[in-house]
Amino acid sequence: MKTSNRTWACAVAMALAACDNGASVVGRQDAAADLPAADVQPDVVADVTPDVTPDVTPDVPADVTPDVTDAAVDAPADVTPDVTPDAGPPPLVRVVAECGTVCVRPSDAVLNAAGTAVFFTAMTATGQPAVFRADVPAVGAAPATPTVLAMGGGMEFPVGIAIANDDATLYVADLSATRGTTRGVGALFSLPATGGAPTAVSLDASLAAPSSIAVSADGASLLVTAVQRGATGSTRGVFRMARGGGAATAVGGALQDPIGVSEGAGGVLAVFDHRRGGPTSGTVLTVGGATGTEFVGGLRARFPAGVGYALDNRALLVSGRSSAGPALLTFVGSDGRASAPAELSMGMVAPRGLHRAQRADLWSVADEAAGSNGAGAIFVVRRP
Image (cartoon, rainbow, N blue to C red; front, side, top):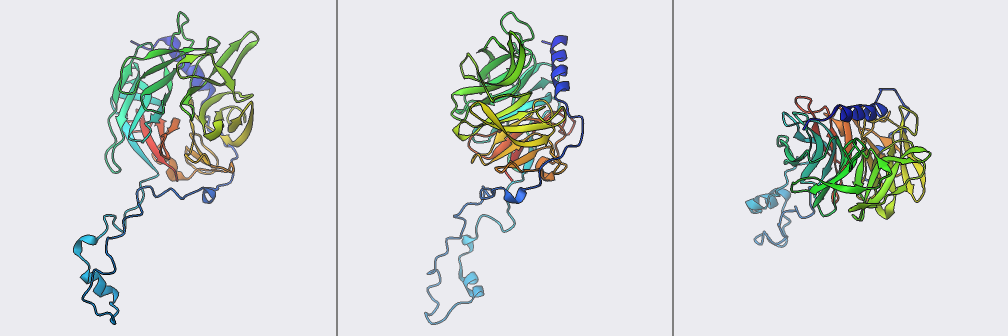
């Protein structure tokens, strides 16, 4: 099935509404030093001390204190720790999958709960809308080649993707799919994470052009950015609905162009509003109840953008550029101060949607133009 001209027209229109025109903006001061860092050494555990007890050299007389050299010689050869002195934490960012000749222009990516597999939306190399999967390779290994998990099945322009908290079901927001008898209005789909045909999810009839999607923190509902059509016009917003579909409720107060959403503990949302600061300056808001509080501004991003809370809800990763440095991602501390260390988006070209794994401070980032041949790649970012 080929993507229709109408589909690409919609895609182009949405992309133009959110494109990065390269204008300079003023961001917050670099506050990398303020960020919590207690968990940045996840691979080094507390029990790596050699199992050498004080009585492993019984022949030393009690009144003679052995020097360090003697102790080292007398110690059994097999008590050397498995962690070498130069072993450090894994890199902050690495490529885990490349489209190569399989796919083009990934738009959003999500990890399973443990961060061992990644799922993403993209087009096949022949232009078919699809959902892809790749196992996350070991650190130092070559990027994985993705496989098609689902293709076609009513999808026209799959943009956003999310995964249920039990890793069983994927949810896809399609910007311009046919819903019922209405062509081009957009739709939501679900499919098994193990693969299978997409199934349409009942979507509130007033909603159109769904783009970003996330699963709520408690796993019970979906959060979708979309356009709501009414008698007096259309508005863009974030909407909450049951995972099985049905009526949707607007959340987030007055928003202009939300293109990314994440829910933290206590039901507080982080929303990337692409045009709140002007046509070239986006703002991340924290939303609790019916009102929103600006968290950090002066960001530029592509469509769709992504935003994801850290596990402790004290920080956010955003797929937007700030003025703090050349990086294409921004890390925001709990005080709303943004930092963009260059190594955080090393190798990236055009990052779009992102999500955090449910049980780890790892974020998957879809880049539409990275990779060895520029067809796109998926990155994993570890919390700095």
